[in-house]
Amino acid sequence: MSNRETKTDVILIGAGIMSATLGTLLKELVPEWKITVFEKLPNAGQESSNEWNNAGTGHAALCELNYTVEKSDGSVDISKAIKINEQFQLSMQFWSYLVNRKLIHNPHDFIMPLPHMSFVQGEQNVAFLKKRFEALSNHPQYQDMEFSDDPEKLMKWIPLIMQGRASNEPIAATKIDSGTDVNFGALTRMLFDHLGNKNVDIHYKHSVNNIKRGNDGLWELKVRDLDSGDMEHHTAKFVFIGGGGGSLHLLQKSGIPEGKHIGGFPVSGIFMVCNNPDVTAQHHAKVYGKAKVGAPPMSVPHLDTRYIENKKSLLFGPFAGFSPKFLKEGSMFDLVTSIKPNNVLTMLAAGAKEMSLTKYLIQQVMLSKEQRMEELREFIPNAKSEDWDLVVAGQRVQVIKDTASGKGTLQFGTEVITAADGSIAALLGASPGASTAVHVMLEVIKRCFPYQMKEWEPKIKEMIPSYGVPLLENPSLLNEIHNLTAQTLGLSGKAAGF
Image 1 (cartoon, rainbow, N blue to C red):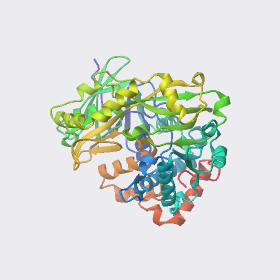
Image 2: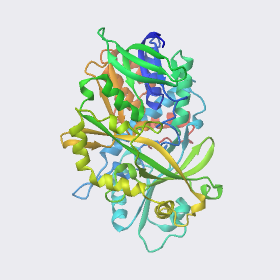
Image 3: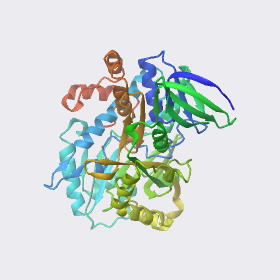
Image 4: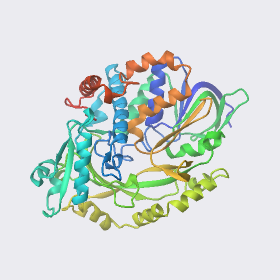
């Protein structure tokens, strides 16, 4: 048993894209602060941030139809898409700053230009897509978007999807060439390599077992070295819990009142992957469809070109799965042990409300490979079973909390929980997650370090020129940022979101 105790300014729990981003921002703002990172796996970016565990879309709200909702009067509400697009621009600017300062290298190792497309079938969906296109293309971020319902044009855009398709079915697509494929696993590892060079103490194979507030106001962490079995004691003024699905348990252990009445519902994902070069050569885009009626937002079907380790693959999915684990490398007891006296009613209310989701997940889990192939053939009519394998993606834990719309409401999104005094913050939830990491971590900084913000703002604006400025109202700044990020990140004169 080790009695080793160390004091530090900041502790980051979890070596994923969120901790990597927060650590990198803080090192630029206050280089003298001592930062320590604990990760229970052997390397950075091995859970939700790993390239095989997420879609790598670079959620810029260019193709995801669930960010644009048709209202009862028939108009399309695009406000969420515009908001997410602006948030993604913050990430692009920060990555460009890091590349320009030579703090990270070779942007093509983590970001590639790739068209983003939406694809729909059926008369009603085609009408919706056209209305969505008309609403979006009035805005500077989307002015390069194209719409087509012409089968000949669609054959040029998406030959793999069009070959063998019945000609009498109304179909349409939108296309914007300035999308990206982002390898968040590679980016996470790059950022941790950079932090390691900046004297950040990064401890892999270290599991945080407990976290509590000391009498002196510092946070005390019990951390187990998984190699030696020794228990270490660490204290910090500020703690960020960025452990993906594992964050909820640690938030509960912290005892902060803001962490009460919150539960989590785990959902796993399964993708189908094709590595046959004859097939992958025929598709060059991320193509998002519409979720089926009754399906949750995280189940929007999409066919993605991916670049992983300099190799082109196609991924189709996600098919939802269920496991009581909160992390891919988690425990089968994660869900049960997350139920506490203060959240049991919230969880029960959600269970009663979400019967349709439960039924959907059971149906998805029971699908055979051939049934999954049938769903794939709605995208690729000529898909052959032997070309496609199943890959289990990362676990996502959807937040359940009491809201104005009722007790036990399931949240689809990313949630930041902070203590009233800003001494601890936890990140919960899922998509759009990684793509908006810079926006989310700036929110953490603003909430947790309000008194330093005035001093830090000039440096934040140096890193992220559009910080605090709505890009929608500043087309000239939008264009300038577009050109700079495209050039720096090697995106062939295009930047994601424009």
